[in-house]
Image (cartoon, rainbow, N blue to C red):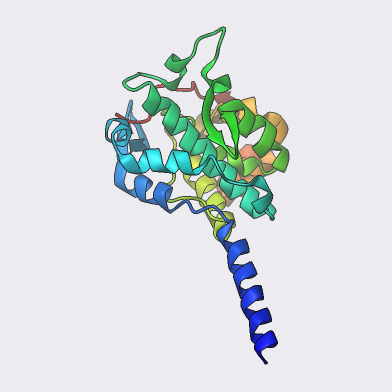
Length: 249
């Protein structure tokens, strides 16, 4: 009997240790709720970040240091990988803005010869990472175009920073909500001028055309009347200018 109890205790401890490996983004979740709020910048509705307050919040520093020791091997499922690296990208973009705050645009943290996207931002899983690496070498190969509505490059024309952390359990719902919110935002996502047969789209759909079957992707989220306009073959697609101004203050 004692041996049996010992075995059960061992198995229980092993299971708990395995569960503990999953990274906890509760600090990020709390920071989002504390320092991100609806606002309008340059006529565009968005979730704005209080970068000045975030810069002095010790919880943000704790969050960044906690990413250093994460083990990528603990991310067993695709949902775990996607939610983890989406959160990491968003945290790193915010950190880049915070590290150089005050600034007018995240692009001001770099230049033409040394773009901000390739700067090391934070140590994640024992390695210095850049936004370029996380987006193009980790997230895009996971082959879910909806990531482009979830990762936020600290700019007005980016999709909105979600007011909660992404989680493996709710990832499907969260990604779907992100796409619908972005497409539904005429200031930066999409709007249709039916009378002139023009469809205005975010430049994201042009830059990452290889990740989307754009028309097919969009029709999944449109009303029947808008689907008809988009698929008529007579509508002209016009890509919106991208506003790289900081998505906050």
